[in-house]
Length: 274
Image 1: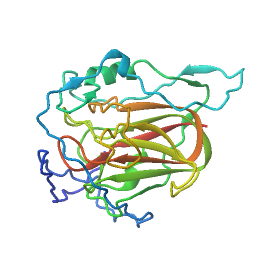
Image 2 (image 1 turned 120 degrees about the vertical axis):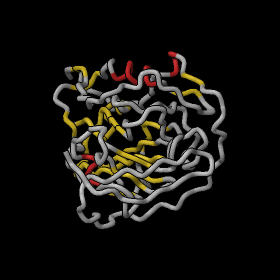
Image 3 (image 1 turned 90 degrees about the vertical axis):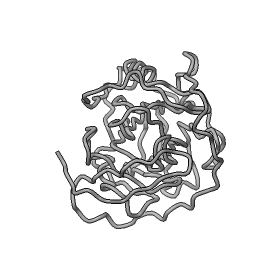
């Protein structure tokens, strides 16, 4: 298990309850900055007192982009994801958002229904380089995003500053991507991350050839267009997003805080492909 002394930095947002910052995994120096910070665009305030709206059964699926033509003899198998163990599963978690969202039970049920993917794909993200819009994370190291640890204990996550932030994984070569799994934070119930956008590109600056496979930014905070995907309650099952063989070298994941704190957290990201 990785440990790190407590980092005493705390942030609050005007509309969301504050939360104590989490300690980092170890006391290693922060990695050198590899990407410029992205200016925070204007946001629209949302009331935290709106009654919760759970998703209907027809809203639970995430529509992936149209995939490239697959070889007719490709053998398809269920994607096997290893989920972390936790003491409590938070299956009755409820949150307050102004839009419909996936409950913890719906997230679990989706995870228990594996995607069909080509046989032989692997987690391409494991131990691959990670950069971020935040040059100096408040907690943790950027490499924690792809180190294979999904534990819920303190010190297993990286925390970026408030405002819109991204992490980016370099797969080091163009690859066919069939699924992306992300665990933001599953140590506490009743948490959903805002403006979650997942993109794939061969351009490290994401200026050209960008494919968006997930967007729940219903306020269009990031200016990519209002998202149609649903926010979801964080659990140990994370969120598994189909990509259907979209090709690219880089994967970028955005967020803009959550319904509990202004922080942006990542415990692990997996990119399944070949």
